[in-house]
Length: 129
Image (cartoon, rainbow, N blue to C red):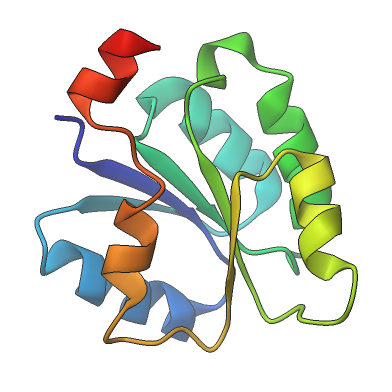
């Protein structure tokens, strides 16, 4: 099973916490501090899931999600927005941009890994797709 996760997040503390929690369950987390680097890494590594902050410098997460969805090789990779944007319409805008899921910040350390894993297809599910 692919155990790699791409985390596109500019905040160092958020990166640390997410990585700490995910690594504790055996996930290998690669970081991208901004959208352009995230697009580059996603194409190179084919992660099991992409965790995407929406409030990024330069290129916001909506634009990143849209660009990721334009790469056919990433069609099967779930994109999950992990964001503090929690106003009415924010979840819908994330989904319209190409995200498959939405998790609000601050993340809950007790449920975060399980929440992320719920978006990842198993090898068996991928073979059936």
